Length: 127
Image (cartoon, helix red, strand yellow):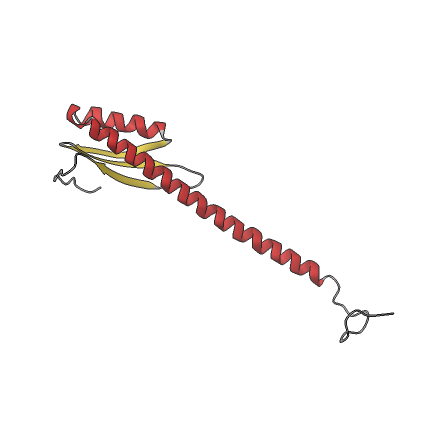
């Protein structure tokens, strides 16, 4: 019987080692892919929440002179159209401060955004 490897005797128990290595490599690659996919979902959720918060704050600032109720109602409409919900809405003068939450997969990040005219010096209290 002829052997392929020089330093091993024919019939040694090294059969199936390649199968084990392929299985381990496949499992590792699947785990890495799952982590990358989860990170991508987290980033997409953060961007979706940020966009919804920005647009809702702009809508609220646009209606700020009509009162807080009208401004926050406009913010909620815009956030809903973006697939998010308004967690907090405050209007002081012409400045709107909106916090939005957007669910994407298992993630639901909360993002705060402010909008108002340039040079507005009023500061709204934090959450």
